[in-house]
Length: 373
Image (cartoon, rainbow, N blue to C red; front, side, top):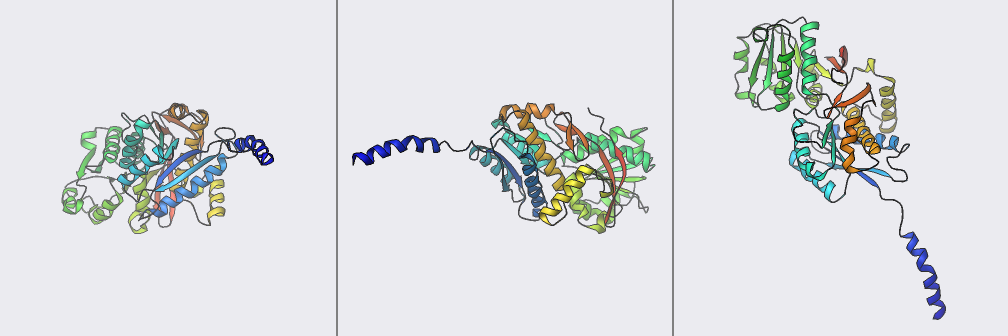
């Protein structure tokens, strides 16, 4: 009996040491539609983040601490996204979040997490970040988006007069439309006209109103769903004019899913067509294809860059949650797929590409360098 007691006493220090275990894992949350109609886009994001996570292991955020990402399904609703964000922060103790593919969702997510000190990196181009210091966008501002479209329509399409159709209850679309008017050359009251339409356009006699307008180009700031609904009415008088899509990035992706609707339509994109991809982007595409046996799209590009942006902010903050926001705001030379990216007032300062969908091919027509530094 005494011998057994002595053996137990000798083993106690050993057991105590083994209980210390490995350093605590650093957790990041990713909120995306992993079910429902947008599940393919959400799955692209998840797969791209897997590659970003593997690349980060070569240069850990904090030495000897593992980084891991928890992927959760928002089921395509803002309320579910908010609930998942709260759970990830309070129960899983994540140090940062990725998600909010559209402006309204990203704004609600940011409002939800603002009191917790956790940072959200989103691909959405936020209409406003007032009072929301927790959110950073890997996208450009609505003002930069509208400015590029106005310059392209006036300079490249040689349009003298424009009609801007704007969805009346969409904050992002209204911000882009305002930027188009602001940056249109010449006497704006005579040359560019805003035509608001109801967010449920089936009851809106838009075709009748457009018949009274004269324009060389039609810019549509609204959703892909409403573009489909209004497609047959989107004519100025009897003359079919060039269409420029001025809605959110995610809505442009939804429109591209229907080649019959987006054929010939112009839009602004963070990424060029495949023929102009950078070596860095081609390397990512090859890695993605090899790993997942499919081609990545814009959701994958944005998710990969967004994850690496957040990881870089955490790295500079040495894993400190309170300092991550400050460090993200200081980034001036982040290596994106399209060159050096700088953060400016919680948005990315980066090039925009004017593209046109031509059957199965996306063609790059013009590049606009950022004015914000």
